[in-house]
Image 1 (cartoon, helix red, strand yellow):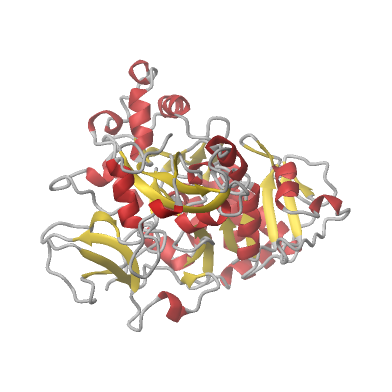
Image 2 (image 1 turned 90 degrees about the vertical axis):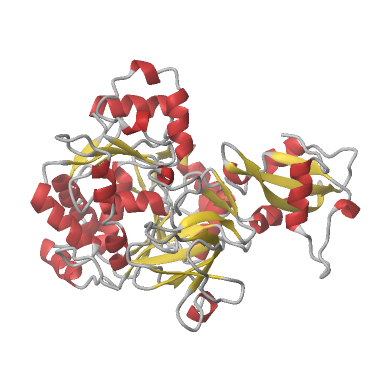
Length: 524
């Protein structure tokens, strides 16, 4: 397999230096309240990187980021990446218990966060997530819930003694010399781990997908062709990134925009009205996000009043970009976190149940391997993740067509639920539900939904059917689950109502069929 010729050493730091030199005065990231050029991103992230080095952060240090989309996320990501730290971005949709789990599983040493993340009071949120944190009187922390965590930096000001306040807009005094930063950057290699992205899997704990600098830079090179393809002739490409930066789609955007001048327009909270306003104000030329957002933008009352002439794709293209130029109705595969968000440098195989390749047009399971996939899962040995020939078995049902590029996505052969573009592990939700005093046992399945793809449905055997209140249970479990993981529909059942396989395990497929057929009724 021939790798794309990038023209530079495929590390994030090298890509940033090239961008700052080649098109430094172009806007890199623009929000509703802030903007930064490529040259400014290089300069400001260098100061932050020198500050990180002064405090002992270096190659391999695990740095957690708890920020919404915006300039601050990008600056800290660049600063940590260019010195070889492993960046672990955390979802601002997390409940306190989920963040605590991510800090523990990710072995985070330094957590960097703003004073407020959208509407979240971060200091109070962290004290709820990490019992014992509030009692600390110094900036060296130690809490059992996240045993490797030693430092928490907060931008925007804080009155907590356990946090170190950092001013992202002012040069700090505690920085190492520029030549030390240059020497450090020279030692960052394409093979070095760059990012760990937590994604739901078939177990109760999220999987930590680890990608190298080389994979991120090679897999993201396609972005310039994709976004330029939607840009009207003669206009600079300025696209709305509606993907969270803490998931692979958003990371591909901030990485892909280092290859060529592709200005990112983004919002801390992507709401249809605000997105339309930003596109009009900044003369946006395209949208990169889940189709549900485009559909909501088209349905918004401001849609017909905004000047969107620079962004014709929002009017005349399918809301789902995976359906553009598709022969038929089956979408192209949007890729996986494990493949770095693309298939550009990935070897693809479609196989039957015995692992035998199937002919073009036949459905089978997608296997991938090669230089475009993850290094592996955090805390998992290679043999647990890849087969003896290096293939990663994705569990996705797909097919390929002769003469047609890409892979066509049919569904999943695993239990993972895909709702509004996010993965939800049934076992994770069940593990939280089963600890609730009102729940004797639970099963969680995904049921087809026109808007979300799948809806999270909980089938609950209550401890006391007469007093069971799904609304109260839902409110309680939001302490440990993101909103999109909380079931939207509840089915109260007797244990005898649940179908079983011959092994005695729950038959989730039959359970889903019964819910969809109305045999087991639920409520929203």
